[in-house]
Length: 208
Image 1 (cartoon, rainbow, N blue to C red):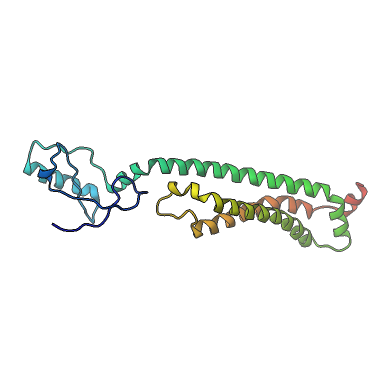
Image 2 (cartoon, one colour; image 1 turned 90 degrees about the vertical axis):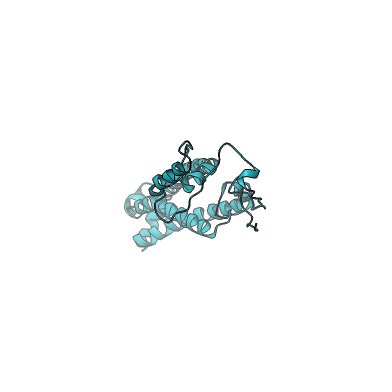
């Protein structure tokens, strides 16, 4: 007899609970689960274990052999499906955001052609124009990003049950995602900004 630690009995998301172990003869069942621990490849242990079982009882069948990783994968199937769908929707949302930001910045540049031409005519360098357009694009992105992070912190409790081994407020995630969004925003703003640096001040003034 002895005392065993609390365990997770049904799902990985549940809190550890007290668990009682009894001898097989006190709780007999027609089937049982054999768990074997090994430091080597689990599949290399399959035949030796089968041979040992056959030596004890040649009529005892072994079936549904799985590694611990496969068992864990089955128990996390719904969470992984939900995470996959959320990842797909996240990529689509990121793509739409990039296209939308590109459209807004490109439209702004087209509307400010005369202004940009005047700036270049009075001495603004192409680098100055590039910084101006990129700064405005990044400003819009930062404002939207701050709002998104606030909303994410508020609603993250609804997705906490889908996560295992990762906090809903994981600092690594909340650091990498804004950096990724800033990179996408910078890329989406760069092409309109580069086109703005090629504005011919003479043509821009004549167009008005």
